[in-house]
Amino acid sequence: MAITPGKLQTQSSAHALVIRPDTAPAKYLPRLLIYAVITLVDRDCRAITSGGFEDATKFYKHRFSIDLKGLSGYKQLSEAHDLRHILVHRLGYTDEQYRRAHKYKKRRVSVDQLYLLEAIKQIRLYADALAGQASKLTVPSGTTTARYQSDLSLHVQIDSPDADRLTSPDFFFLYNEKYYSLRDLIRERHVADREIRLYLRGDSKVLRVYLRKIRALSEQEKLTILTPSKTRNAKDAKEKM
Image (tube, rainbow, N blue to C red; front, side, top):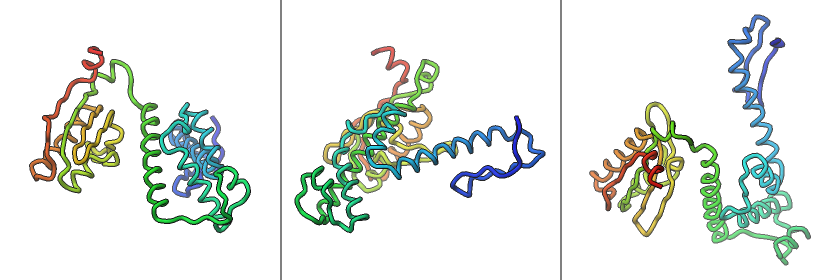
């Protein structure tokens, strides 16, 4: 494998590797592959962001077999995307294409607080739905992995902002020098007033770390455990199905 002297660099100046005549191919090959992947991801991301909402829809369908149009909030997000284009590039003045597509009669658009809050709500719903679909692409499969997977069910009452953050899908926590997102562990999440039911699946040790955080808030009276937590091996659960 011949390596041409020079510099391999992506759009970000932080990702650069100087190639010298005495560079050992075997030593630097893993790094070269990493930078090649970064370059390809940068290219695809720029193509998606510079294209329209329809381009992103086609990309996800082609690459990941994820149908964005079937996700909750897609229609509202698509409308918000078109509205943003009118506001940014046409100073709020609508064109014939926008009026026809959205059955809008006025010549100029405006955004009030109610619309903005609803748009934010729909964006969150859409993001959660997309994250759920994407997580299916990374869920380990096979009996070898299942031996290290466990299920954890929790039924708690939220008594403080800390408890609300701890049970949010966006909650991150550190274990063994790695960050874990609760969103990646959630199989099901049901909310009713102040009560939350969580059904989690993941590495047994990771789940135990999260459970300790739940119990710690319970001891501080910031959260109430309504039903004792239940844990079982994911492999055993599969065999019973």
